[in-house]
Length: 142
Image (cartoon, rainbow, N blue to C red; front, side, top):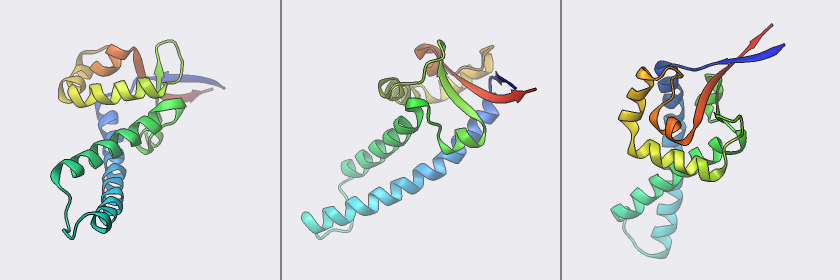
């Protein structure tokens, strides 16, 4: 069997993101609960974080999730379910540095980057076009 791939469209990528956001939200609750308990034990009697700590936990949890799963050829839950894979244009797996750059670009260019898919012939979003990456949908052909 020979492996062939296609470029997933915007619907498939948004569905993949939807799967991932449920897992990321669960991680926000988990890490928020852990750090709130530690914060309450160490520093305060209050049942809430100061807002900058909460935002920092959300940012670091989300960045850690995506950087871990995008680097070294791993896929997120949504990407695995929809058979998506990230590769660079020269077929090399992403490094942690590339994964972090991709995450930051997605934060900065989120809506514009996704609309870009509609006009790109390879269905690349703007951050992937900038970093010379592509999302492929693996299919086995006989």
